[in-house]
Image (cartoon, rainbow, N blue to C red):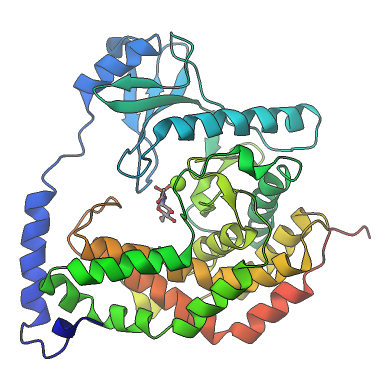
Length: 395
Ligand code: GN1
Ligand code: MG
């Protein structure tokens, strides 16, 4: 714990004003489309900018993603964030391997969803490089929508089946074939080290503003140790690593999931990460960046439906230790994300996109509250996970 967190004299509101002002100066960029750049990128995929209607797509916190419409084609165009993806060609190479594998499965009717693939540039590449930045173009599936929250139990089952089917489809694929896009991405001990580094270097104003959250994280050593312990015995799989509910496309016609999207962080990982991230994004009553913490509650009917469908989606192939790890995953993912948001706040918002000065701190507090609520229901969570049927049995 940093000493300067104690004996503070600066009032928190005053602190907020100071870092608000600094934030505004730093984040002076507008959200307007980068037309000059796009005018250079699009011809490399065979289109002139004047023939394209371009809009911002999605609400990701990392990459800039656009929808491009021409008279006869619609596709997704994405600029990879190189601060985050230090080796962008690994991202595009992994994406090709993933879509090729899923296409084979889909052709053999053993993968029920639609694989998303990357389009080629006029040079037949899976990316183009313009002014040092890497862009790629992705297949767009029309007549689909995404969800920010779950409204009924059938939807919960469909969401969990889709994410489980995605990972289960790779059970015959050696996860080591995929590059580790962000090294130790979901390694809690690495995230704790980054957090400690941020604590050592952060401005006093930021440390004071985040003091209660910092204290709480530092009181969770037993939980941190328990994660290190269970992780030792877990098998690596191909995991998505960003199984938020809005990374699923649903068909407007059938209202069923059509495709798992946003495969940037798909790499070797543990099933508890994907499960926990899905639960994190589906079971809380408020959005991950809402400050209305008093309104946060958990929906255990949805949690049960998600758990049953997720475990059954592996059709008996989930090992006992993997099943047990799911209980840990539920608490781990909000806890780890809160540390990542808190670290970024202390580092001056270098990683996640933010729209106001304390955005990352608000997100961190939100995820810590979610973690607390899950911790209070440990027994219930254990029962739900351990009593879920291993597969969908007939009758
Ligand atoms: C980021 O950009 P987006 O929304 O796809 C982040 C995830 C977080 C998520 C929280 C590469 O994903 O790990 O869970 O924000 N992606 C990366 O909303 O850090
Ligand atoms: Mg993502």
